[in-house]
Length: 90
Image 1 (tube, helix red, strand yellow):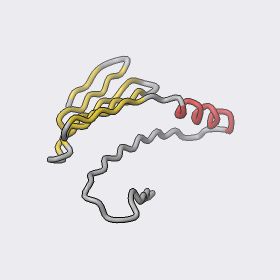
Image 2 (cartoon, helix red, strand yellow):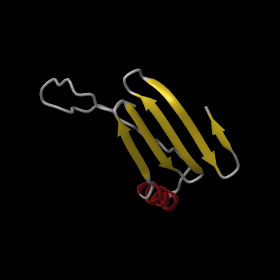
Image 3 (cartoon, rainbow, N blue to C red):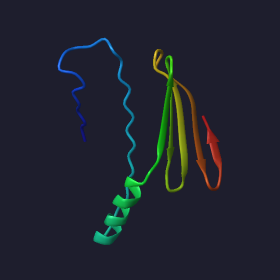
Image 4 (spheres, one colour):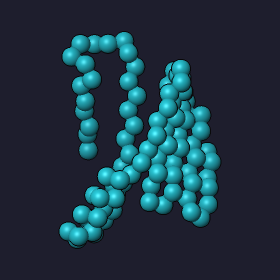
């Protein structure tokens, strides 16, 4: 799978940050696929950027994911996964 995007007709010095969320399910009949699409369209997320730090929070059907990264260094500062059962921190 490949995704492409043109952000500007001319080269720019501005930095662009893109986040992609992917959810996968298998063996869906037509009704379950329709429900899957509805569920995905109601997903919520939040983003915040201060200076060079970007924070992304995403709610999923089994919990949440938070990623904090410094885009000037390309380093992840924090990743937290919260599920109904447990919480992982990296």
